[in-house]
Amino acid sequence: MTPTLPGPVPRSLLSQLPAYVAGRRAAGAEVAALASNESHFAPLPAVVDAISQGAARVNRYPDPQGLELRAAIAKHVGAGTDEVAIGPGSSGVLQQLLTALCEPGDEVIHAWRSFEAYPILVRLAGAVAVGVPLAGERHDLAAMAAAVTDRTRLILLCTPNNPTGVALTTAEVDDLLARVPQHVLVAIDEAYVEYDDSGFDGLELLRRHPNVCLVRTFSKAHGLAGLRVGYAVARPEIAEAVRRTMLTFAVTDLAQSAALASLAAVDEMERRVREVRAERERMIARLRELGWETPDSQANFVWLRCSDERREHLMESFDHADVLVRGYAGDGIRITIADRVANDRALAVLAPVGALA
Image 1 (cartoon, rainbow, N blue to C red):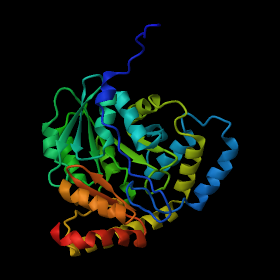
Image 2: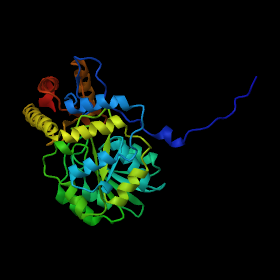
Image 3: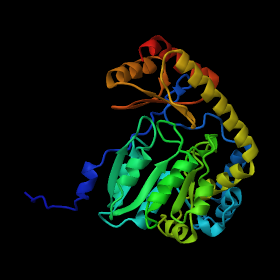
Image 4: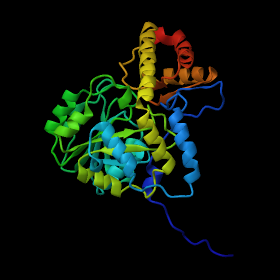
């Protein structure tokens, strides 16, 4: 009998990492998909045309540097092309950024609860994730500044925060930057920036502080979640480092073409954003009428903090109503804003228990 020989062994870290939990996918047209913060609108007509035309070119590699797209993004945000890097979604850009900056054992500070991928991406980069608890539903910036050590390489801020929806203010981040050593990069994850009408201005902070990097995506308001394209804006040497760590050809030609078309149709995208904002405010007002305490979200979702017992009960009720929402053990439930009919289905589930919230 042939003895079994030992084979390659994956990194021990992988067995310790929590799996990223995505929002559940809708299984039928009757299901209201409110779990993943996707745009509920169909792709913009110009985007569909760009994808259709691009289908004839899929036998060719995309531009690995994304020069045309980077130039369009730079014009859109008022930056130089050399200050822009692209990647496969904001998660991909964050992974590139961590790879570019972190040595094994370096520390990365982030709020918690915040975007679920942060501690996973940090540990994959060989760094140490330092989660700082929220103060209520907000980033505790004072505690995050106090957590900085000589090993800190990066601070991740998420505004509006996922999953609570609460936005930071320009003044409070300015104050944080005054307290943080300039060799520590402060990356501001603005995945939901288009929905934020709070007045937060990451671009202003970027212009005044050399250690700021903005990370954005086409997955949310632009509705390109299935194509995976995001970008960073930072001083040229940081942007170049992020470009160098991108997997070659990671942003496909279809994704680049669709993003270009979406930027050219920004007026229509912004009209859709206004509709989502109006529905968001209607939902928040109605939830409060029902007895729920929910923060003033600046994203395309609302947040309900509740006990695990209540969360499990509500998740069962949502399932029975064919409404998909996102539950977070130990914290609460996040509900994506969609059209009025779908939102009302979610409100109908919450109405009977609102007074008990």
